[in-house]
Image (cartoon, helix red, strand yellow):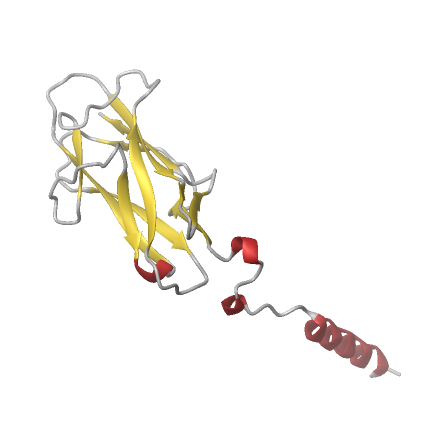
Length: 170
């Protein structure tokens, strides 16, 4: 009698585990989402960053590209620097530059910078910002925002909880 309850519990647990739906994400899942990807900051928050204008090290903002597939195309995520509506906005070229990992300034195309994820595979990349130690007094602010990119082949979307990095330069 003492063994019946534990045996019933174990068999019920085994039945639950065996009944769980197993999805093969490599088959594509729902067709309307098979080419839908997400880019989001790590950690997955819109946390603000405050830095000293004299900081010599590059600011690094890791970006996670979420994908369950390998495709025959490269997926591109966009980001931009936003200062609209911000009091005391930071000025590109005066307070900071957007750079590559080696500190070389990169130029936006139509106001957007891009990160390419080869074969649309899940990966992490980094946005780099170089501070220019501007002599303008007071705090300067900006936001680096990830943007949606919808093409005929795919869509790179963002998380509302991890698409912007407010930056204050003191």
